[in-house]
Length: 304
Ligand code: GLU
Image (cartoon, rainbow, N blue to C red):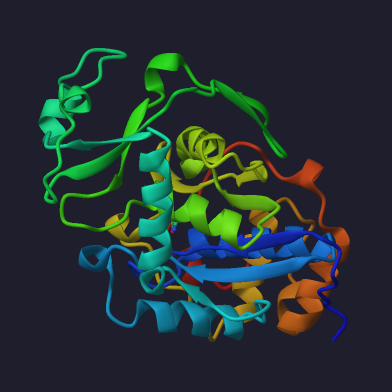
């Protein structure tokens, strides 16, 4: 039984978007963030990021939770659903507006893409009030590097960092960057452990932490599972849904991907035994910091 959560101050989380069931790549992130929390004797929270109904798949939230439970990845406390937190997000946008960090914007994506480096669209000067405009956040301070617990110092060329970005869309949906930072602050997350596909987003999020005068958590970005160089395993490239009847195989594959010395015998153990073993073995120094190519049918494979 052993897996524990004590009140050590560490609070981590897994924050899937319910745009589909978990696939091997998202299982790796769930497992990595779980092991990082549990090896720190901390809490591991689950937050369903269901703020984009057009991209949501009916039943995906339930399927994600069932999949986590089948793999003995039990979260601490109540699940938080972002779709129930609109008032909080509006309240925080109001605060940002009062601090002078926002402007309303009518530009289309194409118009924004046509702006020169460092150029702000004309909307920023026009004090637009119409409700059907997007609300954009304007950085006053751009971070060019941050420390990642796995990758060390991460730097981005200045031109790749968006200095303004949308926090509430024209269709009144809240943007991921806003909701994720508001919730990570609100839930007291001390370390954000997630996939390296969100490295660039971290720069935008750090600017929001500044604007909220809130200390940023630690960040740890796991290698992304790809099917070929540069191609993240995802629903778009038909990643197989994790098969809940192959828990031992799935966990062992995911642990192997995260650098743990797994064996074929391990996959025949119970999920609880595998996870307890993994908590003892967990070592950030062993995680390959590079991405690795896998076959996207790995969830259906039988041996390591
Ligand atoms: N909801 C995001 C996703 O599923 C992850 C958010 C995060 O971990 O910051 O890609």
